Image 1 (cartoon, rainbow, N blue to C red):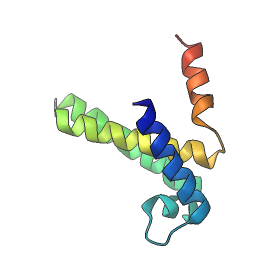
Image 2 (cartoon, rainbow, N blue to C red):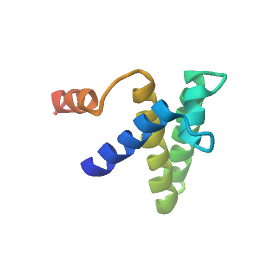
Image 3 (spheres, rainbow, N blue to C red):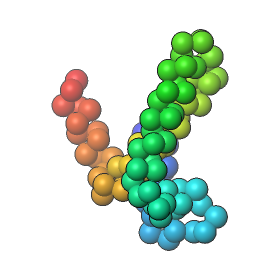
Length: 94
C-alpha cells in the first residue's frame, strides 16, 4: 500500500507542477473555487462511503474509500504537506 500511495502522491505533485489541460487532478489545483473544490469532493465522497457502508455494498465501499484517499492526497499537496508528515502523525497515534 505504501508504494501505491507514494506513486499516487508523486503523480499528484507532478500534475500540480505541470498542470496538463486534460488532467482532472490539475483541474483541482486551478479550480475557481480553490481548495474548496477539493474540500467539497471530500465531503461528497465521505457521504457516499457512509451510504455504501450502510448498504453493505463492498465494491462501492472500496471505490468510495479510494476516492477519499485520492482527494485527501490532493489536499495535502495543496497545503504543501508530505506523506511523511501524515505518516508521522499516524505513527504518533499508535
